[in-house]
Image 1 (cartoon, rainbow, N blue to C red):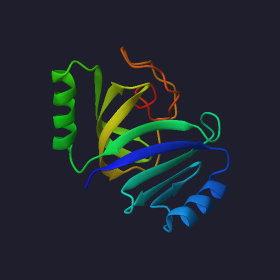
Image 2: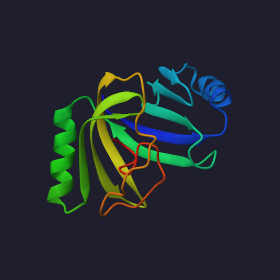
Image 3: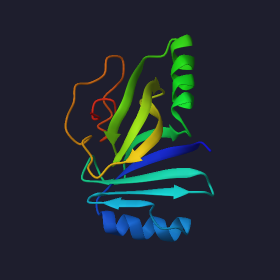
Length: 148
């Protein structure tokens, strides 16, 4: 199952977890210091909360979680075929998970298409990285400029 991902910057992770748990009727699937994510079935949504990055209440980044690396590769091939700039990241640690992903510039900010390969005890994506050529800096924790 694919689902849209919305990553939000929050001012207080505990308050945000409480609010979104009540709103969607489910608790978080993963909680780490300054981070939580929800795997919501209805509507199909991966909601990510990130404390301390960007202004509270703003969008951190958007994406689509897919089932496997083959679906990431198919999206990458499609983007290349239609002339969109991409960056492929294989086995990268982002948002406390090991992921295969491709970043595609679309609209006003890049979109991440990714699959989770494994859980990760740490998040190394919070360190600054160089900005990807052809993709605007979104200030995201896991954006193409922020993942390792």
